[in-house]
Length: 351
Image 1 (cartoon, rainbow, N blue to C red):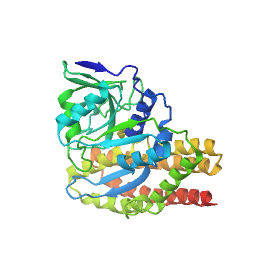
Image 2: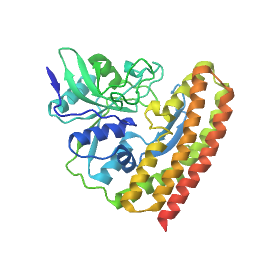
Image 3: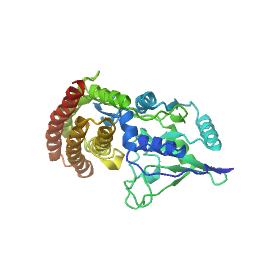
Image 4: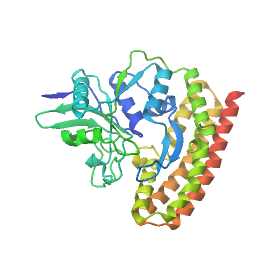
């Protein structure tokens, strides 16, 4: 049996989950920018944690998928329903059903298992979304859309892998990528189905609420390693990396690099660039100048995050421990800048 969803057009993107949502909505003739999707999901945050059992510390500039989906649903009326499956066969059957119904779903995968990503096999990362839109059981392959496209930004760390509108994946490889349970982000067959029938136009009230939520996440987090406090914690804890064994240092640095740099699907600047784009759109819709000012400031912060990413890449690839202190100082400066950006934005919106 072979089936490709008719009329589905793969679209490139900046971050995996918001790009996947954009592609599915576009198939249903609902056109939102990726920036708007990420912003209405209140996707921006920061957290740093050292999970027991995880081979490296966890760094992220965005919320978890279920949290983003819930926020997005509240602000748009579009329901993103998470589904998990205990067995690979059940997960495959559920996906096949969505394909045959011509209703594309969003599937999470472990990048380290998908060979075309070019990520070291030990660097498991399951917080990554793609959109399968075709299957060929005779050939044993699944056709998926990632966040790359022909002639666009590469999705792979392997320079020999060209960006492409579609990726044809061995069915067994795809099954394994959906089934991993590795920390820090076990996939466990997570798939989101999309119900767009309740969609409502983007209203200023939804924008205000989503921005308030991000301000709360950054300024008043429930966990001390989240938000601005989390950035401060990261600046201090990264100094401990100097004593890491070579292998642990390599993977800790490369993981953090991918969590910050656009190569890992952040849109650049630890998701700050894409959120700055959302604030620009928010300024146009609401007429609020404070959104534009915050956008400009956040773009500058994103550049600093990119500098940190380059430091981390050098540490991961060459073991340059001397750059750990440089990265720590830069992250500490970023914490102060982000506090000013979000505190000022909150104060101006409260007026």
